[in-house]
Image (cartoon, rainbow, N blue to C red; front, side):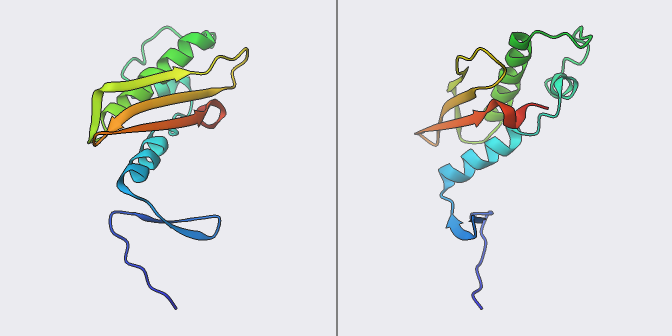
Length: 123
């Protein structure tokens, strides 16, 4: 039997393999988990403080994506160690609702990039 001491959640299993996350990788994982909590448009608007936004089930996809980017910015900027002036969030060009969000920011002085599949956060 092998015992491991976990410090700040830096040991994880992925595909039955034990991996050790460095601080930058742990920050990326934490931020992705924060972002993926979007469950639907109402929850999204409530989370960023605008539940009163007029919505009758016909929010345009660009408006929804703008809300999602605002939500992502809030989550990334709330993470300690992120340089707020370095945050860039963009959606890849796509004809449909699929695609990726690309998030770039400096974390503890190092450039960090995250790509999130749009379908993973579509509630």
